[in-house]
Length: 164
Image (cartoon, rainbow, N blue to C red; front, side):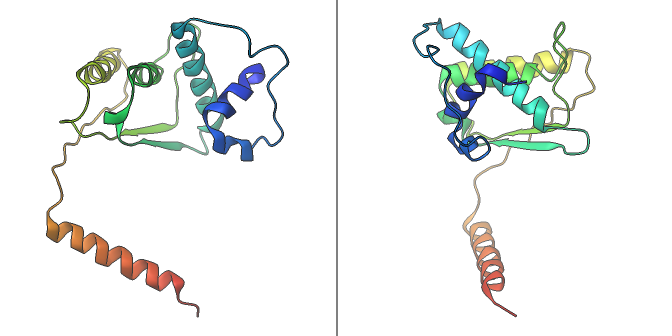
């Protein structure tokens, strides 16, 4: 499904070179200039196609996006497009078998990005889908909670290092 644009996806997500070693860009493709909106559309299509290839009925996928407050306007637009891809659009099937978790600090999220996120979630809710879009708002951890987490993970890691 990624076809001739696979090299673009691997360039965007360098760790994917482990899945596609030796992949090179086709000759003469790098000197084509396109508008920023076309680049955004291509990226969204690539991400959507990739997710539809790996998020399967027997192998659902969890995608955890952290620190959205640091994203650019273009990245927020792609995310909004990804969220809207959870409902069928014309001939494009909806993304299925994917749990998308988005985390951000609400007091640091840019207004334009917050608006794009809220708008795409609202459209998804109103689009007649059965998709649930719960929101959880968490406050900062207290010192006691941080200490418990630290002690728990310290104990877990020391247990993992012990050899029987």
